[in-house]
Image (cartoon, rainbow, N blue to C red; front, side, top):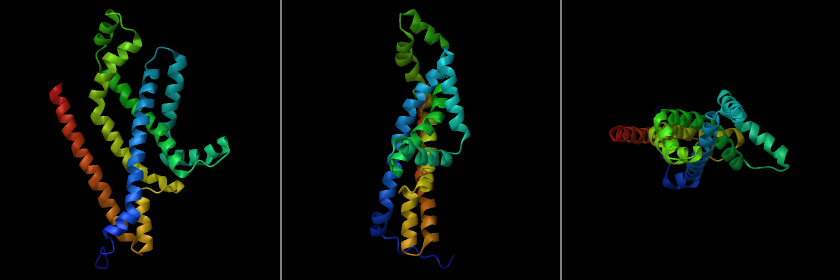
Length: 222
């Protein structure tokens, strides 16, 4: 431990190596979160439908994605999509597509639980005033479901941010990759990995505290 030297981690090193990866990790998290919630909501509505033609495909998709390691799904899309479209897609776009589709399965289960937490009496009340199924979901159920599930959705997003480090498998330049390259260039890999761990901890712990405060505020509203 006495041989550790962090003096090389100046602002120029961080700006030159780390910030590029940080912005990619944040961008990937935000895009995958938005896309995953939208697609996950559709999957949740399909799973709650009374039509087997909608229920079974959605259930199969969710169970498949939740049963396979994320790094394997990343490699699947990175290797198979170019074969399907006839040209390379690139590590960044492969990561965006993979994380959106993968996280949709997890957001789907969160949204399904949120929708089911809304009392059925409110659904029947919507039907009683002449609303259609789509209108009842859009105006009555989904707003309450989103409010109820906000802490869990954000917690899953924190996990998503942590999982962005797995894009190393396809060579994408994320936050961890930036630290790794800086460590190799200055021959200080141990120090850069330690700092990377601290950065991930600070970001995720800070976001966890925000989620905890949000959960307390939602509890007061209830």
